[in-house]
Image (cartoon, rainbow, N blue to C red):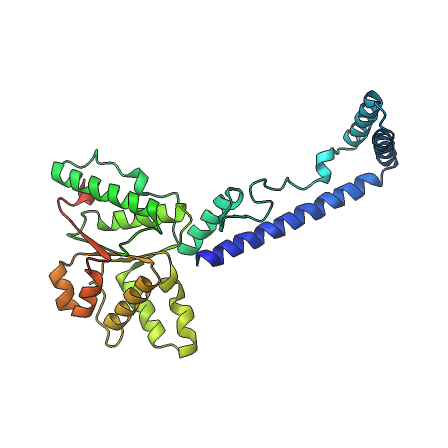
Length: 305
């Protein structure tokens, strides 16, 4: 997904650059059809050429003719800048890429396009916006501060992280989903692709994949398997579908782990609930201490504060 959006932005940049150059050339041709402008420009460029050719130190005359040329342009509503496209970025030379990453000249456009594709507004609540001032319970405030701090470091270090499965468990309203949403926004701001799917939507997508012709299945689940960060929200609330729910959840977890992508799971389940509701293979994949981190959210319902 990230590569697709980056290529799209680069193509749009090239199209815009070409349009600017054509428009600049059109303005130049239109201006130089005016005899007053073309003659003033010729006098200036001839004087400049002769000055260089014969090494004459006649700067005042060259400057005078240059001013006359600019005055001729201004008299007809033009300037020299009208005949030039915007300067090429000095960092990337107009390529849009520096060391394999989006150049700063296209970064804002890239992040916005990435956010649209991911269905995520980068300007919403992110990890940097977390504030404990409204949380009355001291223990809950401290716990949330620690997990937000940890996840901020995680996103900032991505993709150079060891743990690829993050599990947020706890009662309804304790902040699991809010943290997951903040993570995907922060990831998009850093230029990484992210998807946020409820367990129900994920289950329905996997059902669509399962019941589609084999040749169409890869395109249906491509972004789920390849997004840098995938959130599966409220896992355990989806209906159990034979040959779909457990099978495709395990497939997703294993394939994403193999590709070193991060999967974030939020759930009201305890760790024991995962075994009874799914199976031991899914449990072992989710709670493998070598590759996973689990955190239990405690305290009051934050939505009532």
